[in-house]
Image (cartoon, rainbow over all chains, first blue to last red; front, side, top):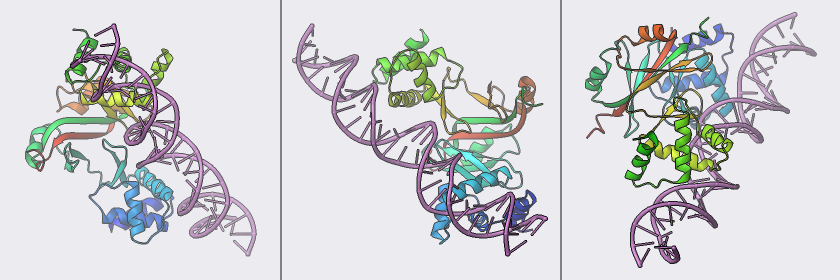
Length: 142
Length: 142
DNA sequence: GGATTAATGAATTCCATTATCACTTGAAAA
DNA sequence: TTTTCAAGTGATAATGGAATTCATTAATCC
């Protein structure tokens, strides 16, 4: 099944309509797979292609896609949120260059020898790391 | 050396003046050690204690303290930045409850058996995790 | 077809943060 | 001490990302 069909199915299955703005936003996301886009980035690219989609709709659609697990929202050190396609539940994390802000992705098959292997693999000199575990605390988990 | 004296020294050593607003903000931070405060939190607590310090000054001071390594700025999933005292280079990370937003801290002596041990130690059901390594990429590291 | 509901988009609002700029402070020099 | 002046401050305006409002439009149901 094509990538776009699969996403369409997820939308429809969750009782949402596949509208033109949603399809257009989805196309932008697919065309720019691998990049980390802000809502405004997407809004601009739509405009550049001649499509008029309201910024509010872009925000709403991105939020919806996040809820459906189609997208992941990323927060780096600046104020904006960045979005990227979630590819088949494959976690991946980010190396963030303090100098040029370049973002390199890496997957997490192995958590243990992370630091050493990553440094070698990407020639990245790690000076700090931030880990966040998300989930439910003992008060909330039942 | 007292905590406050030590921080004072760091300021002066970096050629910054020890002004009243900076000292007051430092006191608030020390009084609330262990909490994650926003700029506005600090501003409010100063006001509640009868001190008038401009919000802009609070922001500037927090930024300065971050540069000097006195503070760490934390970005969680909401829009605000949170600040906490950096205690002697001891990394620690965060468990964030998706339900009540409670934040539990944990240290990182051992990276490997993290997930399991954390779940047990804190009764926290981990459903996702986010790791960011910060440093310098191969283009920037020399 | 008419009614009901979902979705859209322009504009507005919100809110955290940053910039501006005239004024004040405090520490070094006189 | 007093003077001096860069450093620092604070009221307010500006910014920018995100959320909200509401009138309009599109899709779906009976």
